[in-house]
Length: 254
Image (cartoon, rainbow, N blue to C red; front, side, top):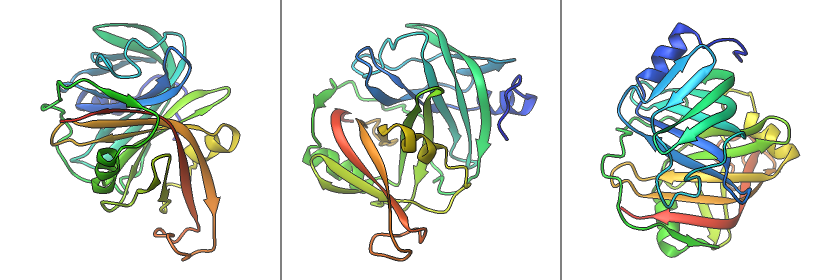
């Protein structure tokens, strides 16, 4: 499943057909964030072990002009076909036109909890990004309406990782301006994100309103909490949930 060699023909074809991806990396101050990347089909071009991305985080995004040389994570999602591919590698070059990533790992994930939708951010808002240190009521409302988010984690040796989380609308609960949590669900049993959190609690969340182009990005720390199966809040019946402590918030309304 993990592919340390060149991209397969199937992986290259999959990437070329996508219009949306999420990238996890560090900003210029070293904080971890997950950001959206969106453009027409063909903006992700894989060749051998190089991924060319003809899109960048937009101005106002915490990863705008992100530092080159760091290990990043990226996930490309085909919402219609309910398929996703994760890539880990090193950002070797970048400018205002795009990014280049040397691929260390590329692998697919199961289709569970992927909700079908049009992922193009055609209505991307032009409003300025709002930065803060806590969730505002509008942020909490966006989270409560979401059935999907992207989770960024990191490993001390292997760097950033980006993953997808889905469930019924409202499965992520806000318990205060600095805290939220979500139940875990049965998945592919790879536990990449949880493995990273076991050694480094830094984490990042990305919520996207695909209808309006609004985005909510949160940087902070996360912890896996264990409980008896079927305990209150254990929606997935697996006996665990994740709590997230908010450090920084960047929101952009549609």
